[in-house]
Amino acid sequence: MESIYDTCMRDAQAYVEGGMHGLIVENHGDIPFSKPEDIGPDTAAFMSVVTDRIARAVDVPLGINVLANAPIHAFAIAMAGRARFIRVNQWANAYVANEGFMEGRAAEAMRYRSMLRADAIKVFADSHVKHGSHAIVADRSIPELTRDLAFFDADAVIATGHRTGDSATMDEIEETGSATHLPVLVGSGVTKDNVAEILKRTNGVIVASSLKRGGVWWNPVDVGRVRELIEAAEPVLKG
View 1 (cartoon, helix red, strand yellow):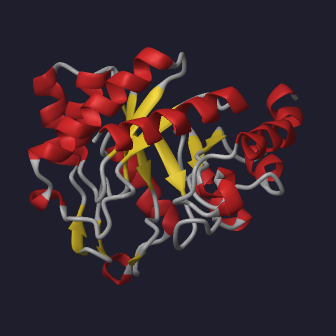
View 2 (cartoon, one colour; view 1 turned 45 degrees about the vertical axis):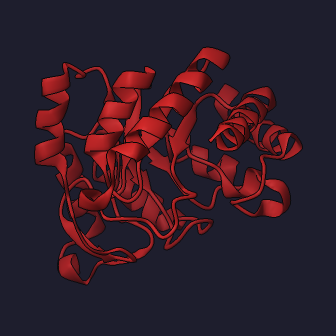
């Protein structure tokens, strides 16, 4: 585990050194991902240790995403590691993912958050989840799915492309944003070339793949790529 912890710390420090404003701790290496009911306490334990170590080493807000679609674990880790938000890929409704049939977990997750007395931990929820088929809700538009997130007490909405590294289209970003009063972020496919245009339409971005060496998500973070992204974003951020 020390090797994994060291890798996480190097990536976290590289992101912050490059100028990122916050970090998400995510078990993206747990491939193939398990469904929520099959994720053991070991995942929460290990991720809590990583989160605590990162929280002690950097001075930026932290978030938690437990794949696949496990907000209960994420709230526990966030509480233990002093993270400020969680990301949930399917908060409301349902879809068919790589892992199988996935249901929104908002009802049980919000009750669990209340039990933890963790109301300060915010929920960032995807509106149209990547890596899945949406045939189950195909008769409902993206604006309707987006409004469901607010109805189920999410705090921010995330728009994505079809898979890791694919960007949401500008039309989809605008369609999502027009349907909600909540802050909107883009959570995939953000690069130095499109970040400025995306930020003109959103409140923030979540970036990983394009900031890794060679633009490959499983490689270490490239500080130079992080700095280039921040430089490209600065005119909009300061504007």
